[in-house]
Image 1 (tube, rainbow, N blue to C red):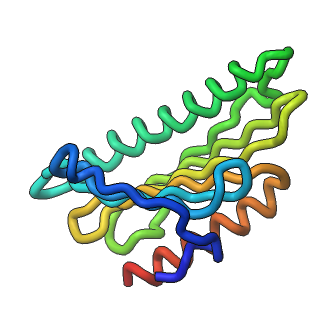
Image 2 (tube, helix red, strand yellow):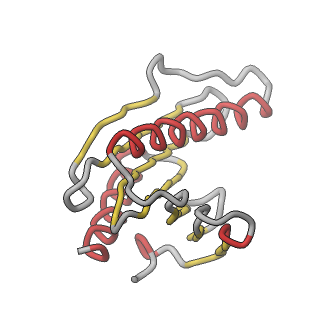
Image 3 (tube, one colour):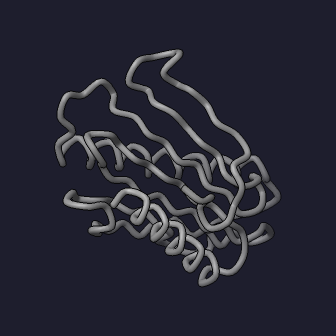
Length: 158
């Protein structure tokens, strides 16, 4: 598998050593620029059903949102979120033969860089596949990068 979006692999972690079913994580790129984290895990489930995926994706989306809000809170200085609804949640068919959930989280804070976070999650061969992509700056450019990375993932799993 080529690096997603041309972003080089910068770190990896074997969570299985700590807890069976916790899986593996790969980080591409540098935090603070454009970066992606890719996780593979099964939580020791024999069969991952759509209800499990939706619960897991909801938790992952909430965690991403909390993490981003916390980073803005720590910045202080009157930074606040400019838009009322920064999250767009949709179900797509990007992973073969399974429901797939995608979150788009766009923050436009005053006094801080615009951040674009994307989370996509699906199931392949009874394994959760979760990818978070984050970048600063232009939203349209970030969406194009995210779409390119998803295309690469889809091709890798076909």
